[in-house]
Length: 541
Image 1 (cartoon, helix red, strand yellow):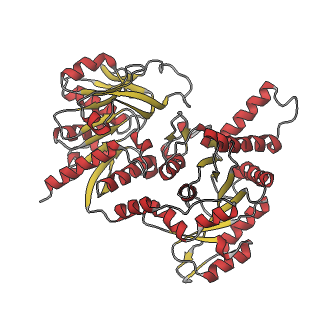
Image 2 (cartoon, one colour):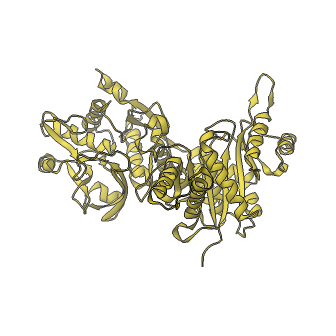
Image 3 (cartoon, helix red, strand yellow):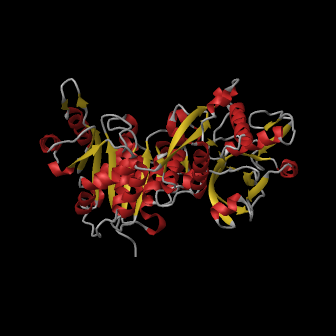
């Protein structure tokens, strides 16, 4: 029997970066805690087909789904909070929408009619909303986040589409949440509601009346303020929800539940649910706020000025820290700084080192130096994607004696290209969506550190890369002691390497951070933090 889906649309106003993604993820978690089936959709107003070709400085992390879609980082929040896999259907961009409509026009699907924003673009957007709602057999609730800020010219087609959609499904089947800002002006010693009033006014001019206002604020909004906001924004005072700043994003669902958001959603959508069970979530929040231990783990990358470029890694450390009753203090290391003389001092006080993925040669040699330090000084090391490739290059140069070992990605004429194109990746003219993307199987070698951690013979993990360990060099790598503990059975590509004569030295070609969730912390991160904690205890008097 097909589910009767209810729809929640989330818009933002006043300024960007207020946290619509966290709001959507939190709302989804509160509804799931009541026993409902929930899925999410992110509508991004940029014209890029996807963020895959965008610089991390422009967009932050590219989040890869199980089916190989390169998507917005908010999909990572969705997965971590509601513990459900997102797929290609859960993210749409202006570029994708227009691309599809233009392809239909070229095929003659519109039978000679003039193609316009209304109805053709808006109809395509609405079809994607329905596709997400009906995915995997259907859902009780679809939460759709509209990227950008109300008033942006780029988001107008999305706003018009959800306005139409709300009318079509009717009240009680759809509701609109508007996230806004209520700033506190220190000079006047008071909160100001005018930005929220103007934002809602602009939303109503588009034809959307918000049902719930979530007000981001530094402090408590008293009843008088909420009544004032409600009066000028045409909502009841109890529909004005306070969204106060919190120490951890994982506190947001608990704060919103306390302020009545969960019950409001259920009542306005006429949903029959059980009482929410937030027991485990509360325990998790307690563990991350009051841990017994602390470890310092360095992340050596090239985008460290923008922490969102490593968002899933940061959150994976939060999850793994909770498992180990420890707070992971991340020490950000600029890869280029490690190319300088005496840069080892930057690594001396660490309990562990992680080298993440990345593209381009900037900082590559600094990462190589960091890996060498970790190998020689027995510092727990975790390499991800490019981090694995750096570990192989370093080992080839300094253990195998292959002078000039390098990656074909950065040195086309490398004397020993121990990292090279994957088979079939040479000469691809298009950059977007052409890498090895999505979930692939990996056979795990028995008796290895990897096998002990996973506890199974075969795993599946998400990938995003074009280069790979060159199989022509596997014999010399293994002769010198490197263990190839994970191999893809489809094409014999190296997925995992480790060193046996080291407390914890492991690197993977895939991205384990994309699978770590509150309910299911990733085992590699958990064991890496455990190893770092052991080193910390050994070094602490």
